[in-house]
Length: 345
Length: 62
Image 1: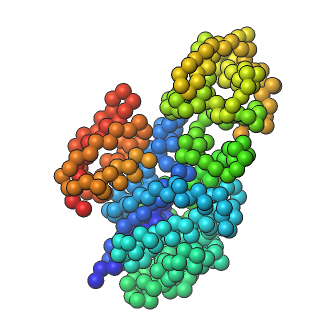
Image 2: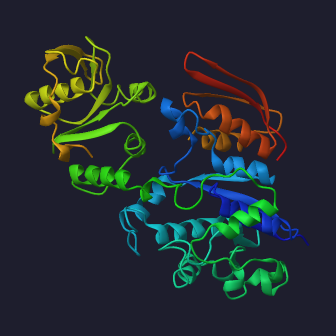
Image 3: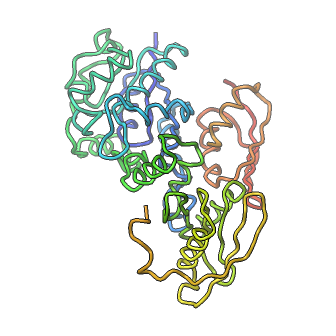
C-alpha cells in the first residue's frame, strides 16, 4: 500500500528538499500552501518596475511543478487574523508570530490530511534554524498544540528527533533521512546539488512580510490609528506599496514611488481620496483617514515635494474624492527640512 | 489571490468544461498556467489587453 504525505510547501529550498527526500522513498506527496495575505510573492515584485527583473513566479507553484506534485493553495486570510492579533507564544523580532503560525498551519494541514485520506505531514523544518519556531524545545510544542503528534515528520532533521510514526511503522526508512541542525545553509545547499537543484528561492525567513521591520512598523501604526488590532486585505496589500507618511494621527498618505506603484494605487482611487500632481509629473497619493482642510493642504504640499516640481514655487494638484468629485489645489512644495522624519513610517 | 479563485471555481466544474479568468494582476500570466500544469488542466488561451489578463482554461480529469 502506497503511503501518502502532505507537505507544507512555502516555496523555499527546505520544503522542496523535504518533499524530494520523501518522494525518493516511494511515498506519494502532495503539497499545501497557505495564503495569509502577508506572503512575499511574485505579484509584489510585479507591481514595481524596479523589481521587474525579479521572478514574478509564485515560488510554491514553481517548486510543486519542479517536484511534479499537486499543490493545494488554501486561503486562510480571515482565520489567520487571530494568530496575528493574539499569538499565544508572542511575536518574534517584529510582528511575526512564528510559533503560533506554524502550529496553526500544521493544524490546518492535519485537517486536510484527515479529510483527504493522507497518512502524515512533512515540513522542511530544521532544528535550530529559526530562533522561535524551529528550536529543539519549541518543535515538540508544534506537534502537541496542533494535535498532529507523531504524524509530523521533518525529513531534514529527523535523525535529531525521536522516531515518528512513519519511521516506526517502516513507511519511511529513518536511515535515509537527515540530521541537519543549526543556521548554516551549507547542508541544504549540498543536498540541493546532489538532487541537481540549482535554482531555488532565497531561503530562510524571506517569505513573510511580518518578519520585515519596516512592514511591522507600518502595521503597528495602522493599529494605533484605528485604536485596535484590525486589518482588511486591502490594508495589508497597501502596506507593501509606496511611501507611508503620517503627518497627523487623523490621516496618512500612501505615495507611489514609481510608475508601477502608481498604476497599482490607481486601482484604489474608488475607495480612498487621492492627490495627483497635474502641473508637473509626480506621484499618485492615497489618503487613508480624514484630514481637515489645513491637513489636506499639508498633504498636498508633501505630495508636491515628491514631484518634478519640488523646486518650483507652486505645484498644482488634483484632489479626488472616492465618488469621483474633483477639485484643483495650488500649493508650495514642502521643503525637505519641513518633512519631519517621524512622519515617515 | 486569483489562482485561489480559479482553483476553487474549477473544483465546482466537470472535466471538459471551460473557465475564463479575467484578472488585473500581471502575475497571473505565470501563476495560473503553472497551477493548471501541475493539476492537469489545459490552457486554451492567455492574452493581455487593455490592462486585463484573460486566461481560458479547459478543466482536466481529477
